[in-house]
Image (cartoon, rainbow, N blue to C red; front, side, top):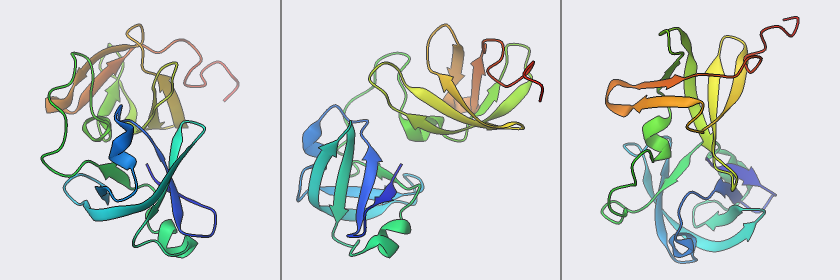
Length: 166
């Protein structure tokens, strides 16, 4: 997801691609709140900083314009996406919006984002007690059913704040 960086119109994005050339200067990407609503944009300048890409797009001339891209996602140009993913791997846009339930079927919240980390991904869930980061490990994520909009997780005690005086 994009957010502004500095005052010159740059945006910071989490990099999910294993191909660094996808974010090289001159490359066309698509940007928007979803793949269906994305529009083309050309990268003018690109640099890496602390595992994230800092990009200047042709249309973002200042911070105000970059602010309009807050929360947007970058997508490969249609038709350029790589082949099928490995088993148990998902695109971020497939996960965002899925219901999160416990093994008993109790609704815990909705996935709102994916934070890609070297160690492991963290899935951001918005629930009744606020935002919770869920480690995306096989021990916690029991199943993902994109077609039915559902993720089943078995969260460790205390992750939702229970027993913390709330």
